[in-house]
Amino acid sequence: MIRAEGITKRFGRVAAVRDVSFELAKGGSMALWGSNGAGKTTLIRCLLGVMRFQGAAAIGGVDVRRCGRTARSLVGYVPQELAFHDDARLGASMMFFAGLRRAGAGAAAASLEMVGLRGHEHKRVRDLSGGMKQRLALAIAMLSDPPVIVLDEPTSNLDAAGRGEIVEALRGLRKKGKTLLFASHRPDEVIGLADQVLVMERGAVERRTTPAELWPSAKGVQVVRLHLAMATEQAAAQALREAGHAVHLNGHGLCVAVARDRKAAPIHALARANIEVRDLEVLEDVTMPEAES
Amino acid sequence: MSAVPQTVAIESNPRRRSYAGGALAFARREFRDAMSSRWFLLYTMAFSALAVAVSFMSLSGAGSQGFAGFGRTTAGLLNLIMLIVPLMALIAGAGTIAGERERGTLLYLLAQPVSRTQVILGKYLGLALALVCSLCIGFGVSAGALAWRAGGVGLGSYATLVGMTCALALAMLAVGTLVSAMSRRTGVATGVALFVWLALVFLSDLGLMAGSILFKLRVQEVFGLGALNPLQAFKMSVIVSMNASLDVLGPAGVYASQAFGEGLPWLLGSVIGAWTIVPLAVAVGAFARRGSV
Image (cartoon, rainbow over all chains, first blue to last red; front, side):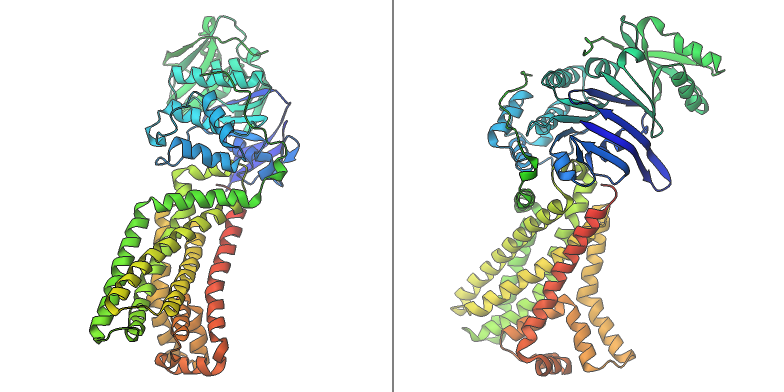
């Protein structure tokens, strides 16, 4: 359903995405995992055809570069944060996008019903909570019942309850046979929604794996933040990746999602690479969802 | 959140999507947003107030009543239009794409099943309609004042003035849209639009005067260069349409009357038309060829 061949996107001399290739079958679900700046968002934008790129991409057999409009009609896109006119009312916004996607008022109402926003049509977008905006984005994505849903860190700005609602809705869509491609930093989402994981670093695919390979323990996952000397962060991230850990490097430190009973494993891996860990803190005790089969 | 609905409309053939339908959806939204925005209200009120003031001053200064005063009123309105209307249209156009880009909403719009051409043409159409409405309100109020004070308005001449002003507004809106399509930020686009306005209103006249002295330009060259400015083309068109002689513009006007005769309104109209079509076509091309959002 989604095919990428040698996708490369450069911004000047910097290659944000380098030679990325993968295929995702109909009904499959793939998570894009990687640090901030790994190229996940750029890859998604290339696949949507909103950015020029080298290589080839097709959605449902439709060439994204040649027939972008048709390819995008097969995709529902949920951005990290709903960027929409704040003054617009929810109902009017929904009808505008329904017009773009050639969906009727009935489909708009059904989509709002699906995400629990029916009855809020009169509210202005600026008055919606983060979770409601995200649910609105999901409702817009589902307007024409597209076979592919692409999500760019859809729960990154939500609280636990909001995350749960979105993940529940996505699991429902998976059961309907939708193809899912999503970027995420959260192990629980990846385990709960994905059957494949594309690990990306510095624009390239590091490996293609499964949630079960990344987190083999059935005892749950904890996200641990390691405090290191700033100069050693990149080397530490590389060492941890080579040791098979799921690493997420952002502006606040090096986060590793590890099995609950293996929290010392990253420290040992770094010790072997002669990198000192100054401190660690457990950020989240992730409840293991039931993995999608 | 409720379960996934079973009644969402399905687009069976995405290739059947109407191309015009997508552009019209943008036009409708742009028109609605413009009509409810502060700039629309401000420009409409300012233009109406100035038009009424100019009309009254023209009539009272001449001490004349009836249709005879309309020629003087039109001359007064002409100068007002040449100052205000290009400014309105350029600023409105400058914000259209750059504003979406700056707010982060452009990516989300482009991720829908629409082409970049549909987006830019739809937004141009919506703004054009809003501008025409704004001008018609201003001219309507002015005509009402004229009818009350002078006992009537030369409807044909007035309608011609309104029509040509709308044509000038559409041309300047196209230039503003081009500036917007090529700018990353609204502030930059507005600054460039203001410079264009300054160049067309003041600098081109000064440059033509200086050039004709420095390079000893012939009268046909002075006319040709002057007519390339859409504001001058508009001014000459209005004067010609009022069955007045272009002799008031000096030797260049005399030359134009003699050289082009009956074809002069078509020539001047073509200049304004070209100032609409060429910038809009370049804007569409530049926007469609952008490598990123």
